Image (cartoon, rainbow, N blue to C red; front, top):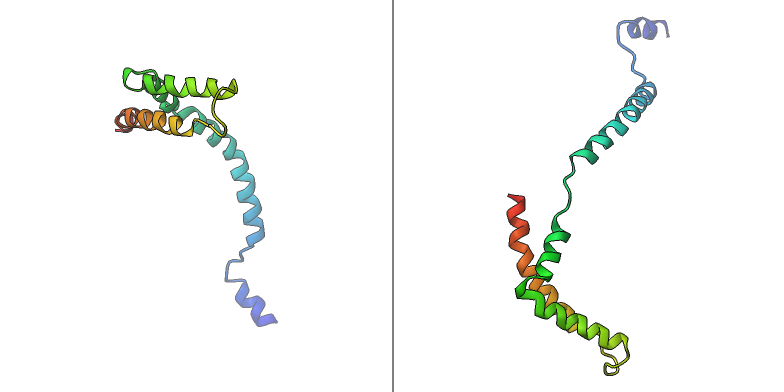
Amino acid sequence: MAILDYIASFLPTVHAEEEEEEKTEETQDEEPAAAEEEEEEEPEDEQPVIREECKESAKCKALTEHFTHCQEKVEAGEGYKGEDCVEELFHMMHCVDECAGPKLWAKLK
């Protein structure tokens, strides 16, 4: 054992557990500051605003009104049995997607 102690005196000793604890303490102090920076840097999502504008645009307004009328009719119990307005919803959403897509891509550039 004396030879091992003699050799060990020339080699640095590494304690992994102590380093992990030190790193954990350091990162805990840094994480709240980093989270605050991320919140400040994140831009507002413009997609809902653009989609709403497209819903009310001349191109999609008729489909939006048709879907709304269908929903009102079904909720009032005046629709036929099993009517759910899914087809009208898909037509309206397809129009909104076609309108909003190019505008959203332009914002990414």
